[in-house]
Length: 188
Image (cartoon, rainbow, N blue to C red):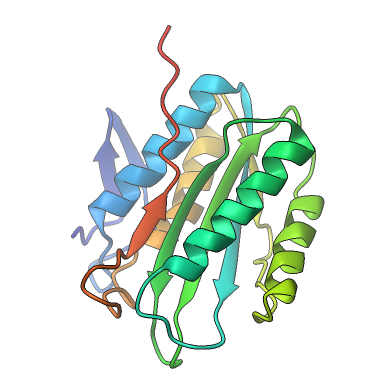
């Protein structure tokens, strides 16, 4: 747990959406950075999208979210002819009786030109499964480009919200607070 507004990971010091009152989980921040770095090792331009997925009823495990991500990735792989899709999600449960998920998706920015079709697909899956409509925050996406540290830092800050301490831990003992795609870094 970190209670500061910066974190040092992989030789970089990055500003995070955290402070002394609201702590952040370092392992989620590290996973976010690893996914961003891995995607940028494969693609010079990456679309970074942040969404929220809601559930109608409580589930002690993350099977619904795992199924959702699997279905979405299968569609995106076929539609965009891509094999790598970066994904990081966190599970939260606060005032409502059912959990919700914060989600970051990363795709090849040369094949996906705008997030509108991606967002519509996320909404269609949720509707087909009788889930509440996913929430799309304002300014939900960034165009990451290799070497553009300013945009990288802004996207990381936005994604660091997923690491916040509040709302985590309400689950079965065998379920995780977060999940990720584990895209491997391209080694030269």
